[in-house]
Structures are given as C-alpha cells and as structure tokens.
Image (cartoon, rainbow, N blue to C red; front, side, top):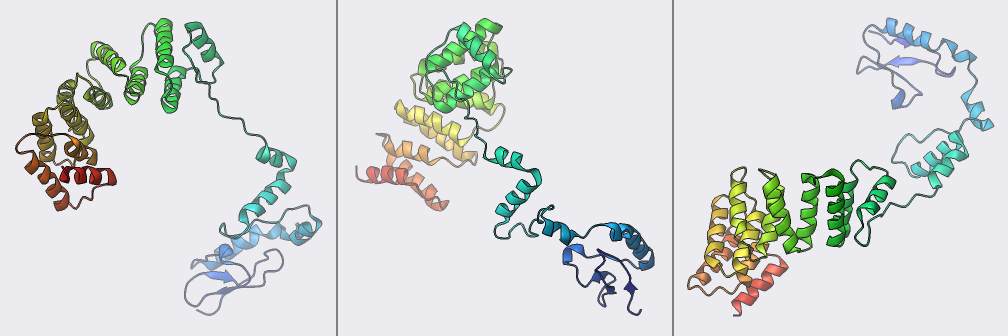
Length: 325
C-alpha cells in the first residue's frame, strides 16, 4: 500500500496525517504522543469521523489569543513529576476559582477535639458531654478508645461504665473489651479480675483477643494459673500464639514454677511456633536452680543458632549475665 494522506482540520494548523511504514496507524507530525490517532485498516471511515468532529473549529476563537488576553489560565504541565508542578497547579486553580480557593487552602484548621475528662464525672455530666458530641451514637466506645490512647485515669473510665450501666441497664461487650485493654495496659490487677468475672458470667464464649488480654493480665498476679485454663480455651478454637504462650511462661517463671514453664515451652516448639525473644530472656533472667536447667538453657542457644536467629540487645545482656553467674 502506498502512502495514505488524511486531511484533517485540527485547530486550522494541522497539515497532514501520514501513515507509518512499520504499523497500521497514522500519527500527526506536529502532535505529541498524547494526541496520537490510531487508524485501523478501514481508514476512510475513521477519517470521515475525524473530519466531522472538527467541522466547527473555524468558528472557535484562537486559543493563543485567549491565553495572551489572560482570560484563560495556562494549562497544567504534562508530567506530574515536572519541577514546580504543585506550585503551577495551585496558581492554575487560584486563577480558575478565584479568592475562594485561596481562603479554603490557607484557612485556619479547627483543632482536634480532646474532650477526655481529667477526673471522674457524674452520670449527668457524662450525659451532657455525650449530647454535645458530634457522633453521639458511638460516644462511649469512642471515648474509651481516647482514654486508652491517652492512658487516662482508670477512675474516669469506671465513671463512664457506671453512666452507661445507669443509662442502658447493661454494658456492651465492645465497651468492656476496651475497658479491659485499659486495665491490662495500666497493670490494674483487681479491675482485670472484676472484668473477668463479669464477662465470664455474661458471655458464653469470648474472642481470642479477650483471652489474650486476660492471659497477659493474669500472668503477673497470684492467679497466674488461670492462664493455663485460658490457653486451653483458645486451643478449642485456634492454635495459641507465641505471645500467649510467652505470657503464661512468664507467669510460671515469676512464681518459680520452672517445670510448668518448660512444659509450655516444649509444647509451643512442637506446634512449630517460634518463641519471642522476651520468652527466652525470661528463662535466662529467672533464677533456675534445677539440676538440668543449664543444659536446657544451652538448648535455647542451640535453637537460635540452628534457626539463624540473632538475639536483640536486651536478650544479649541477659545471656551475658547468665554466663557470668
């Protein structure tokens, strides 16, 4: 096939469309790759359509004259990676929308609400605070999450629970779970026991997240053996995580029950779980007086070496102190 010429009036300055020798499409000589026109084999039908789409171009005013008069802002740069793109885009939008855009861009931002009480409130005060809140539907849960993030006083959280109980006659599982998280993170042991009794009576089953929080909370108390029962409850649903085992092991070691600690450790390894470094550190930090404790601690080092696990700084210090005993 010979060279195919397509006559098109694109802004009255486009001369010709020439057919490429390497493929079946036509490209205008003076147009960038963004304006390439792909022409199939039936070129005549497409060229007619292109010609019709630009019939009214002669009646349109010249774009360059508009740009010179300042009525139409300059176009944005083609590449988003071009230098100064953000500044040019801001200028373009400011010219297009006027001063309203500049006010909206540079207007003062409202500070985030921080309406966490610094002391316990009465039911009436909580009700007033809830009525003033924007999203009153999830007010209690949202407030408890804010308290957790700010590590608020536990008495403030208690007053919120008391208000909810008076207002609705009950406290939801979701709210109790967040209150439990606040108690565990703040090492409030008696409150953890209270929540455990409440949730155990009210709910037949708990989420694994609640079990994990209770294991962590009980492991540091005289009721640490409850961790073993909670582990069994998790096993009925899923395999306990290394962190679940780690908290139970820490509880056993803190209360000088090395036998239970090693049983839990071996069970964890048999399940194919990798212990946390905090668990290894608890073994090396504990005062193990058993005859075979030295060989078992050496086996921990062999496990790390065989699995190419590099101890962290805290674990290295504990291992060093164990060697120096």
